[in-house]
Image (cartoon, rainbow, N blue to C red; front, top):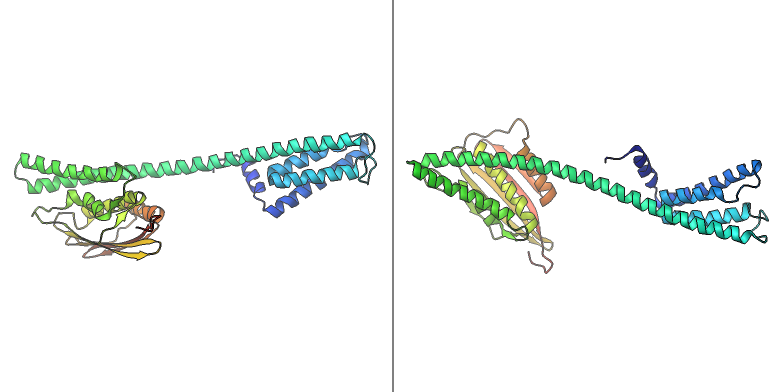
Length: 340
């Protein structure tokens, strides 16, 4: 968190447990009484309760309203017993009632000031934490956007190569390429046009694979098998992004490199009281020999973050020679009326 040393010191001090905060209030009052006793040896006519105001303020700022009020009560009792005539007694001589009333009134005002200051410091600390979180999220979004743009450009290049292989004339290439670009556009529309809509997982898959589905020989690159699963709005985008990353990886390094391979996608559903638990299997066949990468790329880190942060699921991957494979599991929470 971006904060001053003073604020960090305050954070450590204000992190007292409830019992410790009240002990801190007692310590403040004891110190105030000791200082006032020491002052009394040199200036017997000093105000009987001046040092207690600082104790009330410190207790309320560090401990909060409760410990501050406790410090106020202790300060009234200590000043009354130790310093208001007749001393060492809870009796009041004529004219001292006003002194005691002033102590309580000013102490209550200081308590209110200290509690307000603590609330302002807490709000400032929360604002700093929110700013740090927003900055971190902005940095993540920037990286994701850059990565997404690179993937889109890679996808467009792949679409151009696929269209060129299957087209005999410039007009045919233009029509084929335009059709695939429209399919790519449909993917982004599906994932961004209305964040409130639920979408079936098959529709998300079809939108993502539309631009890659047909090989140069006219056969399908994909096999999709699984029951209907309606994804709530908050899961549509992360699932779509994960599928997009898998397809992008397949076009760069896997079964879709030369357009001759095949991807088999199967998913199953386990219905539980808390909702649906989805198991999503991705298997690639017929592409070049696969080996584990030497380093983890941003795409892999992005998928891991989406699975952990947005889906709260698990993702396991295998780099088998015959083709890349992965299993994704995540939960679809039950709706309030019990449906999923």
